[in-house]
Image (cartoon, rainbow, N blue to C red; front, side):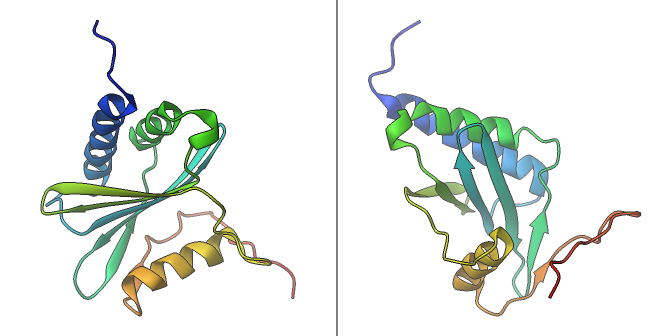
Length: 144
């Protein structure tokens, strides 16, 4: 097997696999897909959305191949050069990936608050549609 000339020989196909895995979850035409991912050693946290014009729909990646594809891409980088956040979009059948290498955390901000801040910066006041909670699920909120 030939040796890769550099990490980009591996990263390009890995990023393409992320797009295929995302589209297997979302389905339909590959336009308007946005994947927001936070990652660290041994974990990834993907949030998958599709712009539907007047609203944005969230898709749960569940047991798809998406997390495996994200791990594969993340581990291609040298440990001291790994991204902490990836913004991955699909439009016109082509993907674009942008990476952040620090923390996006603000003091006192929860993971949910941060994700909502990122989504608001991207989509403005468009409503984000989430699926209903499964039967028997409970939502916990911090005490006031």
